[in-house]
Length: 366
Image (cartoon, rainbow, N blue to C red; front, side, top):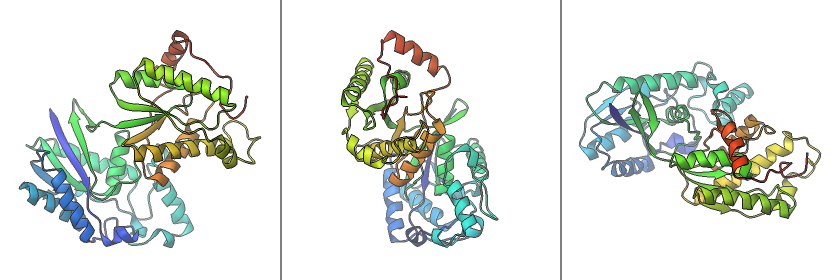
């Protein structure tokens, strides 16, 4: 059995525009821009084959769903499983009015990591609770006599649902739509990602490149490593990356070698140990630049192999990726490079391809 779900965020409200937390108790209608977004959304969905729309009962979602349902001439029903998260005491307020304790909770709420699944504001729902009722709602719809179902919902619901499906996306634009499929007992994103994979070296990327190419994933490798010194070492690693990409017929992109800027950014941290503050800044600089490039060049997500090496702290890489993703409003995908046989494959490929193996990360020898 296959079911297709087109899950979309409502159009803009005045409270969205003002940066106020809406949650469940603040039931604002769409503004003029939001109504235009709903019309455009309906236009985008006209060839989807939708048979019905289920909506959160809140005005902003229902108005959006109503526009879509009328345009497509299909029925509309409400379902509380898809209502926005209950944000408790911060509903109706702006970020700058939060207390220190509330700011701490907000910083954890914004993080898309498993250890923060149970974070919630006073009187509100946790991320885990929001996700659980969303999944429950989707499973309820599996018994409906429709194959293609639209769902009008909210940003928190979508962020946590996408995380459940393996995609970290902090910013969900008003009117954004995601195609999710239920098939063979699982939910998955139907829209194939166009991934830009940041590679630091061929030994760290070879297994990932091989695996993604064999899965026919649409991706390119990008080489942005201004931390590597001297230039001759940089060129050697770049050329090995390029050789692996040519072998698996993967597009290879090289960005600027701005080592001088990298040195300025990390100035004063020259004696930091590996996994120290210099590494954090280095990861952040490189990931942010790659996300900016990806955003401008038609990619849908950025991933990296910066945490594949055992010398690196994967949590540190992911934290800096999350920071860069928030600032650029561009999604980051965590791609497996350490577990599930990937290290065995990596060692095998390094030997088979006779890959050059550097003895230090880039900024200085160990």
